[in-house]
Amino acid sequence: MNFPLYIAKRYLFSKSKNNAINIITGIAAVGIVVGAMALFVVLSVFSGLREFSLSFSNDFDPDIKGTAVTGKFFTLTSQQEQKLNQIPGIASYSKVLEERVLFFFDGKEQVTYLKGVDSKFTQTNVVEQNVVNGKWLKPNTIEVVIGYGISEKLSLGLYDFNNPFEVYVPRKGKGVIESEAEAFNKTRLIPVGIYAISEDLDQKYVFCDLTLAQELLELQPNQLSGLELKLKPNADEASVMKAVADLFQNKLQIRNRAQQNATLYKMLNTENIAVYLIFTLVIIIALFNLIGALIMMILDKKSNLKTLHSLGSDIKDLKKIFLLQGSLLSVFGGLVGLILGIIIVLIQQQFKWVMITESLAYPVVFSIQNVAIVFATIVSLGVVSSWIASSRVSPKLLD
Image: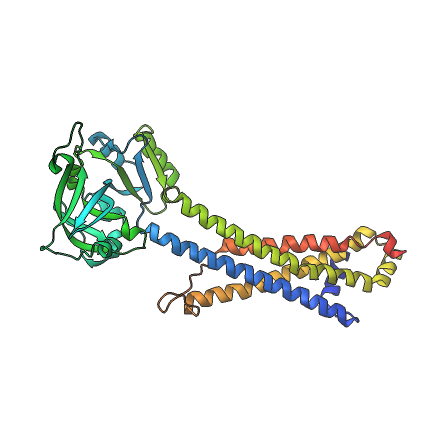
């Protein structure tokens, strides 16, 4: 049997004659349990908030998006479309055209994006599922779907034929402009649906038919501003992105969802790291109790250590006893804390006890990654703390 491990287990599970040592050891154990539990719950909460925050952009952004590397628009040839259909991993793709334009309604105006979409757009994007009033637009019509924020700003409803909803798009050309017709392409639009996703996105887009957008922008039928792709389940994202980039000879900038929302992902990751470091600092402070408990245990067992040393035990083995004792306490405390944390997270997922609003529960996500992070943090810090305390065992102490 491993001699240091056997002694360490005896010291760990047996009470000391000194009641103060028992109290300090108990406080250290509780600190480890509570620290592990709190760290896991907080990481689970931030994972839930991350998923909740990204759900808005995921409802709007495609799996992969391609835009022109130079300029606003690019040309999609029929040969490229055929090859695009042959790329493994692509479930569907949509051709889109967007530009910032001026909208006018009943004396009010709003500058935002007009986004022309084809008939396949609803297969690559779930915006249609977020239409809260009315319906999605029909192809080859002047119907449009507007955001809830735009609807509020312009006091615009659906099927209002008394007040025209118009779009003004600057025309191409040079020279002196002598009339409004020379300056703008304009047409009347018919709002048939209102979507609601988030405050920012609800003010960003007016969806229309792709052909209508191309006519207003004076572009050819094969000129686009973007390609939006939906991947098949379990498709290799990296290989699909490379295949699309090679098809367009790197003239398109190909981005996945994380790259499309790089700022948002960076902010969420930074917040997650900051919270992890803060709670890790709390755990480090709590582990000072472990160091103190082990040092007091060393002093309490000084006579026993002298006896073991006289019987032939090396100083290294005696140090290992307290290193293992502290490490075992960290492992058991971490496991108990994780079990309690997992129970709390699963209860919140199932029963939604903590609510943000009357209809929205506080989001939490159970993740094996978080379990591994918390356990590794507790054990590694516990081992370091135990090593610091066990270093007090020295020949000078046993003299």
